[in-house]
Length: 144
Image 1 (cartoon, rainbow, N blue to C red):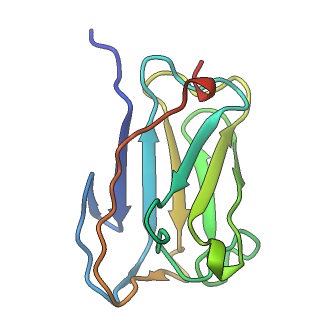
Image 2 (cartoon, rainbow, N blue to C red; image 1 turned 120 degrees about the horizontal axis):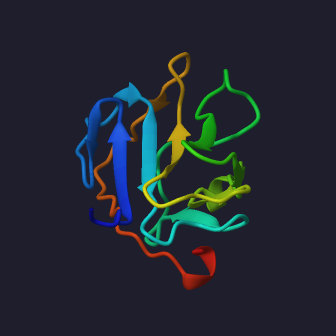
């Protein structure tokens, strides 16, 4: 039996892959999913979603306070509870989100996910084209 590999996918509703195309102006739910590799992630560790060039535009007013509001962001896992940090309301910092796992940590093959938008208030795709790279770069201090 082979060990699970670290893997990241991005989805917009049912459109899922390592790289996807979505229609400008469409509305839906963004979901970034990380699968833990053989080492897993220890409690207090996690992943950071970060856009190196410009910003990651999954929505324009990302927020974590109002699930019925625009661009509501949430995080979860199929293992431990997950804390979502650094989702700023300030428009010049719309490039980062940090997911931190609680005890007992994320085991090999388990998943973390980040969503933006809800069924009641889906996120709107911005009116320009951009490429999203879903490569994994996990610093050693985040792993078990």
